[in-house]
Length: 446
Image (cartoon, rainbow, N blue to C red; front, side):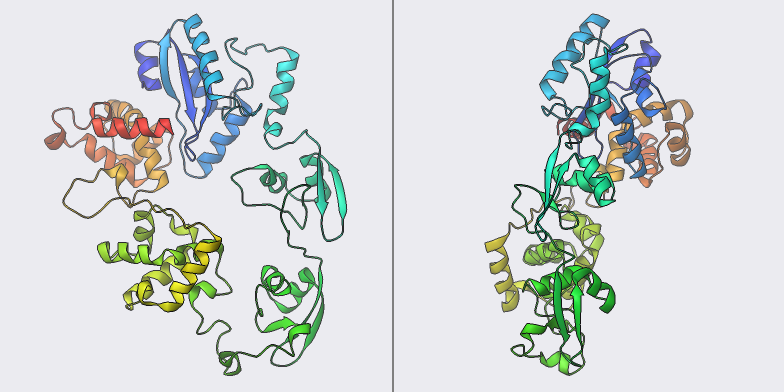
């Protein structure tokens, strides 16, 4: 793999094949023929750049990621054009559903002056993946109302952002319904905010009637909790129960005593527990084993198991507090029952053990505390080294010169560049480090 700066400096007249990878997902998203600084034009306001690629690069930049193209092959123009066609065919294009590339043509023509039909394909490419120009049938089960049209038209009909509708078409999305609407043919029971219910306060006897959305605002209860009460998944929400169940419902002792509405309940039965937090509680035994081994705080504990703290910060906090108080899931009968029930309905989350505190050398990009942002910085180590060789500067200035957001990983990297005692006369050179090369190649193969 060659860096852009090296190619432009040493072989300014060379043609090359370059590749862009989504820094978040690792998907290969664009392949192109380049000459000079063509590969970097997508990072600027170039008029001949792929618009969808530019939008993704801009979005990732706001999320803290950096996108730097990789040079795959050098050669003559005809040879590179031939390879471009082969690469695009092998990886596949997103706009026609054969792969992940944002390319709007099959390559080989340079697409400097595409015909009208190609221009039309380019204009519509971003919609095809989400069914934008394809008409669909949407249904609202509660009323039987039907809407026929494109995803864009449907978003306008509901007066919501198009992004919310697009999630209905994404396989990786958990969104199956929007405002009570779903795609015809999907097996899902959407929350009906307009469903009318009658509820009663279990202590003072007050009654309320109306739609779930109206009652949620009137009594200050989350609409999702009210929906779960209406569907029988929850006995009550902040002491409100279905009116038809008030004669058969026995008010819990802790509520009569004036305690919190989920006092004495295990955390996995908490009204505020999410699907993510319940999944973490379901593997509490494995998390406890890791905590016993390393005695980490919530952030490092989450990362050492391949999770991110923002997945469910409250659950990680409560887990660590319970461990410190001596809680052992394997000795808790209630937890064992919950775990058994959970496994019959759902799949347990996968755990990826990252880093340990033994005597072996831990590489900075494999450390348990490495974030996704710093991980992306380490992937650009050779490009940063090329810039640093001319300036011999510190981390913050290096980040500015490279046009990157600063992170502590850059300062750590500069220290390695200057570590002549450990790495010899040149200091640390990523392209000469087998461990870094392995790390870099694994990232490009995903």
